[in-house]
Amino acid sequence: MAEVVLKQITKAFQSQNAVKGLDLVVPDGSFTVLVGPSGCGKSTTLRMIAGLEEATSGEILIGEQPVTHLPPGKRDVAMVFQNYALYPTMSVYDNIAYGLRNRGYSKKECQQRVGEIAEVVGLTPYLTRKPAQLSGGQRQRVALARAMVKKPQVFLMDEPLSNLDAKLRNQMRVELTSLHKQLGSTFIYVTHDQVEAMTMGDQIVVMNEGQIMQVAAPMELYLEPENLFVAQFIGSPPMNIIPADGDGQEQWGFRPEKAHLCHADAVSASTLDELLLPGRIHSREILGSDALYHVETKKGRIVVKTAVDTLMDSGTPVMVTVPRSSLYVFDRTTGRRVR
Ligand code: ATP
Image 1 (spheres, rainbow, N blue to C red):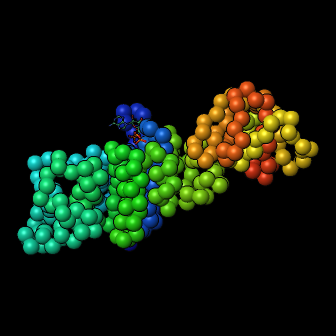
Image 2 (tube, rainbow, N blue to C red):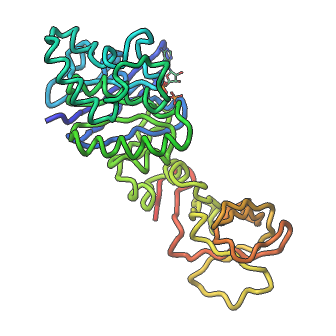
Image 3 (spheres, protein in one colour):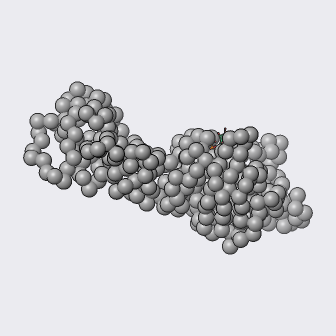
């Protein structure tokens, strides 16, 4: 079992709390993603699990063992960093074998283990090369292989794809998720990119200002955000938030793809099931099959995502229609979702 449990984990740097009393269960074998804006404490949390940073208070358990005060080498975890941290003068083979030699494995055992792992990550033809002779994606695979060779219970990854170009990043996302299935180990992955989180994670932990905002499966986060922060962080473009009708204690939210747009003079009779927002097109972005319209309304600027069939120009008077069943309701003061 390699469940990872954090109990009331806090980290203070000088007098500032970077991580504030986190309680989290990372299930055995899950692909858990910590996601949030820059500075929210996700890397610090991962580094505390790795043992690279000591928690100021609280407890960490890995596979039911308390590890809070153990050094990194005693935790049965392996970390993959953003910059790969490869040894430039060593061959790919030696980079992968390094950790095994340090642990006293024989030459034959090293050859066997490195050979197996190189096969899994597709590096067999490159074992004699130096890191400088590899592409970014291949270097990333060496970094992964170096972590895998230790057969850890838990893999910890801090933005491992951020140095790759967009195409390679997509490819490596797919490779990492299939590697996770193949290994069956627990993965904890840090990213600031909500798309990466949504596509890779089976459990997503959304963080903000050192605290957990919500823990859920990807679609649950999207469909059932518990608060304004999650509603606006997950989904691209973000959820529209407008003041609700009434006493001002509530805010309404709706996803850009749930709203409909038509010419102001083409509106037929409205129903009680719909919210109508008259406005004027401020600008548009054509994404290919879809277009984003930025519409100025009395309740502020909103974004509507529609299929590109009839294009409307800036300045056009329009009516935005939102089915009331697609409205989320948030408490204005606390940000908590009410409905
Ligand atoms: P990013 O996506 O930018 O890496 P993050 O969510 O991973 O951000 P952390 O690196 O965990 O954020 O940092 C959380 C907070 O702790 C930040 O305000 C940061 O400035 C602070 N911090 C991190 N490491 C240290 C340190 N060694 N000394 C002082 N403050 C630190």
